[in-house]
Image (tube, rainbow, N blue to C red; front, side, top):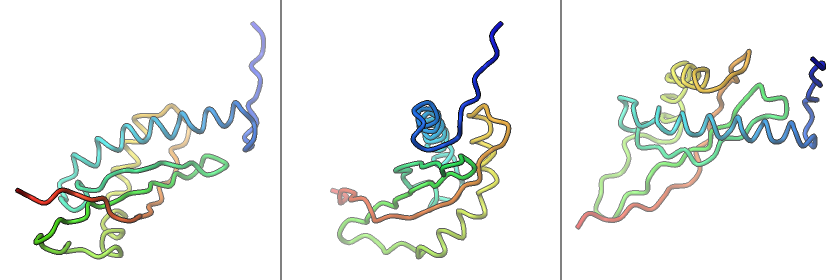
Length: 124
């Protein structure tokens, strides 16, 4: 049996880039479901837009959006800082979900970024 080649963990290495993209897709699929299962309704409504890995793969940046309310709807009860604080409180649960979805020795740390709002239709 031939020895395995070591994959260099460098951006620009095609095999590393492919593995990084694969990791992000796996995490995105798993966390989209995990967010929907959260008991905190403000967090459950967030939409996971993108997952980006750091160059060394030790951290993942989760880009999230909250739905924009239609005309006549109540303003969101939480500002972005409060929402990020709540995300911090469920970080360990989300990391456990990531660990179950990927096959790596170490589970990446999770960072959160809130971006814009998405349009939701007004109730008829």
